Length: 360
Image 1 (cartoon, one colour):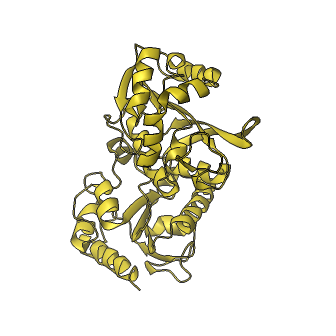
Image 2 (spheres, one colour):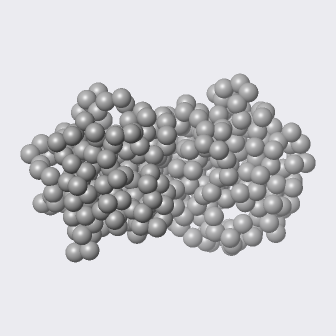
Image 3 (tube, helix red, strand yellow):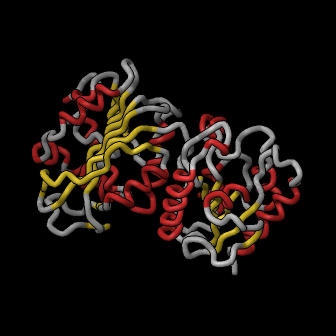
């Protein structure tokens, strides 16, 4: 989150508490009822703790403003309060059984929301329910007429927000505008989702390469790293090609080398042949919208057979005429050990060629 937004909440926490009583207790209670009994719940951006009691126990209230947490401790003494940023959750993978986020992720910049939701995804166990609210609209920045001026907001429309949630590894049950609740002429989007057993996108601004697998294996989904299964040659080839410098570290690849990762189909499976044509079509549409939004220099499809199944049945390995989503596209063979006729040197050569295409 932007520090100036946190500073507003630090300075005016008591005023905020008085001006913003809990209005969504029924939704918070519904989330609590969907969480596995005894599992830890997360209130991400808890503010002064207005919804903590409705979420049940055990519960963690997390906020970037310490002044808010001081109030939350008084309001809900049983809650565990943690000062932290939504973009850097200090929790172990799979530590939470559910998450509530009321008007908190709207303070995350648009291009950084995929990263923040990736952090949320990895903090949750598979099957965990999530509920959040976001402000509808297209603005980003300081809003005119804000009664707590200085805060930075990012507004969303339903369709792009749904895409980002799906990309972050969530199955979305509801992402809709609540037209009955209008605050200062603003409409709100309510989200109900479930943390899937899959890999979240690791994407952001200034992408040099966007690597797109067909879909995650269940092994990779559980480990939290794409192409992680022993015998898969992707990471050795990527290191040899020089596009990354750390083995099986996709966060470092994104932050240090501008190499992002996504999947054509988000559903994890033991084999790719169980995927349906509808999943391919839906996944290709989401991917194209992602590419048109973030504008990587090159999108690299990791797996020729998957690209043929989803996009172009006659494609051959190499740079693709016409590109994809308005950028250059490169297709390379599958690095799985099953595809043994393609050597690790061959895979590295393809990745080097894709990287060179990024500088044309």
